[in-house]
Image (tube, rainbow, N blue to C red; front, side, top):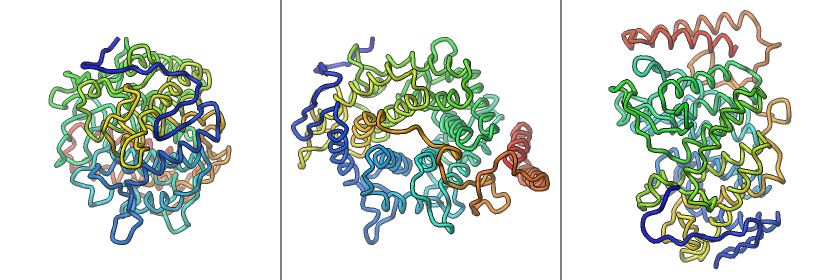
Length: 472
């Protein structure tokens, strides 16, 4: 059991009762009541957005937040639209998501270069993947498509798989001049893992699953996923060859792999992925305060030291627990209890600010704690709208209602990566196109390999020849 330092009043939450914060009242048994409360919290989240106003940059939320968190926030708003059916923010979300794609349509805008992490790009890619899976309104034909954007992010992250240190893995930062380039971490590899799992399920192309397996195997082999406890640790410096692991545990690290494992299980129905999923879920107690089933951030919440990034992490745990329920329904009894208790606790904190409905950070006090921001609103919203999952359908695939078009070579610079095309299937892969793509991959990646002086990059080259020929 983990204890919070200092004085904390822990809620005694009724799992399925009426919740009354001074500002928001919601009956967690009633769909309409949940939607009404979620609208208030979503409006509070959107109070941080002015990108659709004259002279402002679309896609970016106010408050000095890093670029990645804006991408994550649009994910919360996609969830809001999908679960509630409220289309108030559909147009502004679409505009913001498309404005930030960058000139190469891969969520690598040049103005973010100096601080761009693989995890940052990955969160925007996951939001694009959500748009495809939610059948979010498709962009016009002259704009990048949601599935193609997710594929571009997946490809460009997989392209920087690095075997020079630690026998594989993706570095935290995208470029050598970025602070943190010498660190490999679970979340940068986790977004690649989750995107691979989701793209396999959506398209039916198992090469994406090959990469998901590859990431999982590497995380396990290096010890970032502990093979005995299934704790997901943060990462390690490459100079130690990942031998000295930073064993801090964050909610979103564990949840990222939990959801990815759920996607893999849903597609494969294999006992291996069910076991992995079950073992990850068994670590939930690390992130639940005492016996309350309330989600908290043990690495920083007790000391009140969570930074703005970390204040949003609980949002992704709630979001990905919800996805796990949809993809692996047998997990519902355990995960829904946590989500309902946490939603109950979260909404009680939404009684602060000048409007009386601003949400706080810690869910352990039973009231607003004086902390507010984009992350706090996201977390409360995701916990609350998770209560609408029983009234919703599982994420779509391209055979169950998903209509987004893809481009398997997006993000690689090959064969017009900016031109959207239907997601490929086994029966429509033309042999000549396969050969062309494979040869183009060889030419491109050989030049990359030479630029890197061949330092342990041969395996990377071999992997990408395989990837391009299979995606064709």
